[in-house]
Length: 452
Image 1 (cartoon, helix red, strand yellow):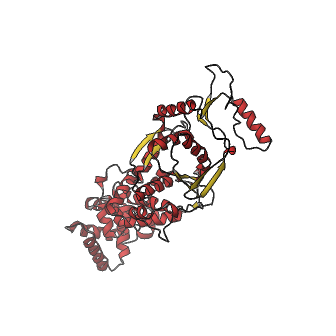
Image 2: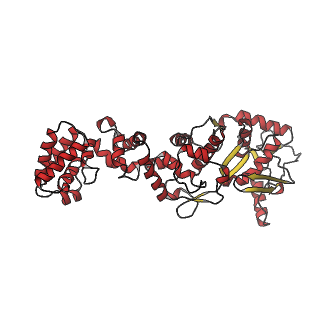
Image 3: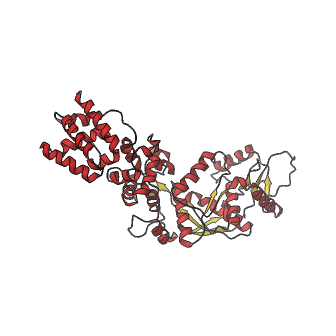
């Protein structure tokens, strides 16, 4: 979710400024950057409708370029080979911590003239300035300053020849003409090292904007234990992409007291200056409220496309055997909090259900209910059309003729049609079932309830 918010803010600012939004897959960490993880990023971006102007660029496909820059830095004396063993580095760290010092590389190989065999493993380190300060004006945090003496010579190429994240992103920013970098504030400590590398390459330093973290409902940093933290899990849970985008934009950014934004309004109003410095708290109830708004406010056809995806998750393989999902949305938008819940309730209009809700049967199937169902069946069979209003009118007349309340007619019919006593208006429910399925289910219910 933090990555999705960062992507959203970057996308909005690029669109606000008429700039370009670049999608870059930073996959040099082979353990974390698995193909499923990369696919999830692409899928999430597409689902959230955050379209990109360039990319996706993959760092693992740019190794030749990184090696070229590393050779240049070595030739210019701005980087060096380091043969320090793992054992030496661990001992150095232990000694520094015992002395109460910040663990950091001591520059042992920086100006070393020791001889090493060709097959001896080494890393390549960037020669960080040893004096002075490195500072930047962050769009959110303001002026940030570090002493170069507090920074060590960080590794830019591992012993297996692969480049590191802090090095790759700088080369990418330079090559891709990146002017603004919006990212989480867990990257603040990387920034001074990267700035020194920009300078070493003779490149312009981008404007940085570090976003405060997102906290869970309990005030702790948002993590897996808070449940749905991946974007696609929110889709699985039944949220609309527009609702999630609208919710994410308000996590750390505001425009007066406005809560609901169209994409056009977000793009028009988004500025870095309006981003808050403090951490944002994730509030599931508020997300639910926003999702409910969009389920009702968006065109039913649009919501219906997303509902179709959820229906397939409920085992509906052929939508042609039921109503247009847009009709379901119109009937259920006020009756469900998520699309997952809506799909669960609407499944009965596409596939047969197993049995009737015992509680509903006990409450509503009384003496005379079967006779009412038989009478309703005859009336419905005689109707020429199959629209909600005439269906409602015909059944209301039946109730009046029988001298009973509408519940005595509508509820047994609901149970017959859906398996339970909760559904939209009985006319709408019949329309969603379709004529053939509705009549068949009423006949089946008459047989079932006659035996009780």
